[in-house]
Figure (spheres, one colour):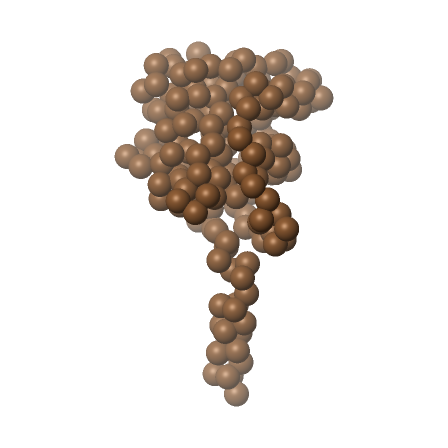
Length: 176
């Protein structure tokens, strides 16, 4: 009887179309906030909106202003570091904070020419627009902490898609 229940449960999960999108973004996160979510078929069918870095900066600065934080500026070096991480994530079809070579956000920022004293990073996948990605980050304590850091002055933002078109987002926040 127990074996039959287990088989039925496994088959039910395997037959669920949304299970194909199940992603466990991390096994351990010192800031908390590891999560997985399922999306509606309508959302899954939406096209990915191209990233507009200026509009992303404006949205981030509006959120920071609502929370009493100073505005940030776009930095091309941090954008290169973010792009490298988005490409790495898309290439392996998995999010994470370590680069394909094991590098950290701070190391990637420095490699891109940014003399980071601090570098924080938010990553995410599957969101069809930067606005949707930002909304998720603002509702997650660890991501929100990064967005509202007082000791950062600049950001780089990037998005890359994997072979199936799934978007991978990276925001690098830096302070010199």
